[in-house]
Length: 376
Image (cartoon, rainbow, N blue to C red; front, side, top):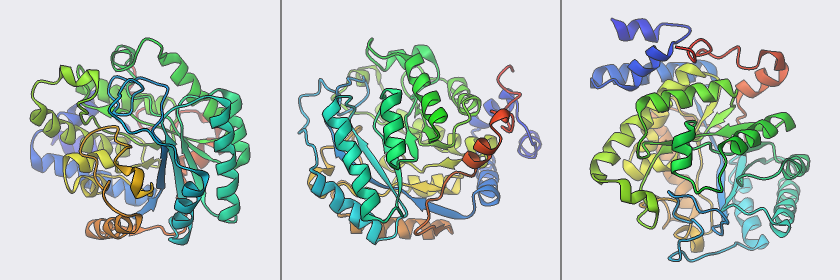
């Protein structure tokens, strides 16, 4: 009875959300997923939108403790795709009617890199007659850089907070990282006019279910438009892996938490975009399908040139690294069909929450179901 009462609420307390993430009974968990799928259908439609992702470089100036392409990992074959190779991948995305593109790379802030991204944005706009939506996932930059990329035509930006708990954030980053700076970047992106995306790693050492619920409340407080979060998956060439004792148990737990987080987030913020991340498939062959059934509505097919895919592994056992872009397209279409959703071909699939936010800026966070939960 308690579960049904919570699922039929219009607003949730932190205690409600903690109850949901700690569910263990499979029947009750499935009821949570069913409710989340219902809310997805009602608020963003029974569609899945593609974001064709081009991981154009694994060169990174950062040294995050969990990441396989961290600067100190000498066992990585570093690469930087040429402009021609990137545009060839972008042409595939356009020709196959994906609707949107994601440009992602290791983090760099030098002027040469910034100007390279300038040119790529402009050429993708020209190549697609302005029809491709452009999402950037290029790390922390100064406000001026964010603004110039926005002015050139990028309109969505994904910058994961990784954890809203300051102590946890610091534990997975070197001392030169600043939690407040990361939050400031999110606020800059929102002020400039981007659709703002963020997300967290689910199941990092030392993390509790309360931390995860606090992450969801952080998303609500920051009025985020889209979320790309996924389970923590180990990479042996990182410092953080030394803190993992039972790797198999961690995989099972992180998959469970990851799917519940998708569902609970859909309850709390029903009109945002939520990605079914590739990391879920790294833990379960049908992990992304399960995420769609739990409320996710975004998929990011990998369109990185096959020659480079194996070198862009933030975590181990990343799926699809030995496939062509066309293989990935056919595979995902089949996965979506098994869920019962349809693909929003040729559509940007922008977050309905974004338009509500920009049309009612004075209501920052006030339309969030969990607005009363932060103080619980």
